[in-house]
Length: 146
Image (cartoon, rainbow, N blue to C red; front, side):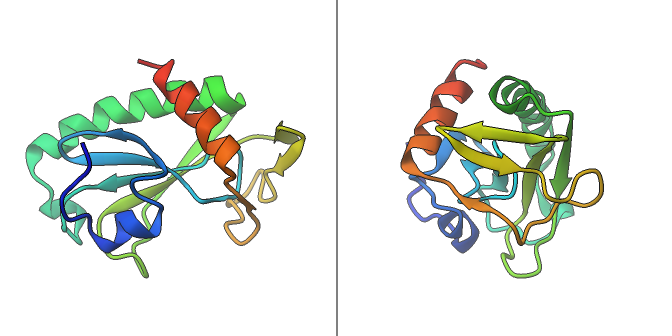
């Protein structure tokens, strides 16, 4: 069920087209710009602009989603590490950029997805646009992690 009035950060990251999961307090989205294969956005569904302003129940839901995100990443791109980046300088509502990390390249449908920053910080400036085919593959993989 789509949110009746999604906030600007959700919309920026393609909601509802990129939606993998929507809970009471969080949405998991395919990150439209993929710095590494399988990159996601974990976005609070409320208008909160400070992490500490989220209700207690949001933290319990987030814990369950983090476990599922990590199962998804391991299955989808065989990541070696995962980075959760809470930047919120431009997109104000609470959200994390979830970046699977790996040495070497990964590919999807013949498209290479290098981890240009490995083993240091992820290089968010170098990314591959998430195609409709990739989004579909990620949705199918997400569904398989239930």
